[in-house]
Length: 81
Image (cartoon, rainbow, N blue to C red; front, top):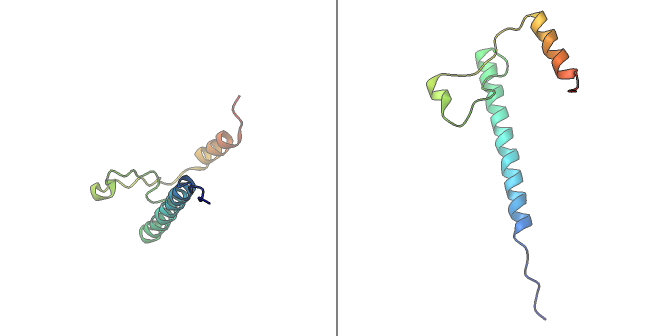
């Protein structure tokens, strides 16, 4: 009896998902290390793949005052209408 042809789609999708997750984990580790070395929070967040690190354009948010922090909390917690 002939065997059924095996689908390649599921293993390929699994590899793609795990590769994406691995990439996200590596980016998080690098951002945490950079934040620890620079003494800032969220270092490198939002950096694209265009090599901005070489240009010295790290996107690090500065200190946020209490009014701005409260506004952000309200906006995030309020559902859209």
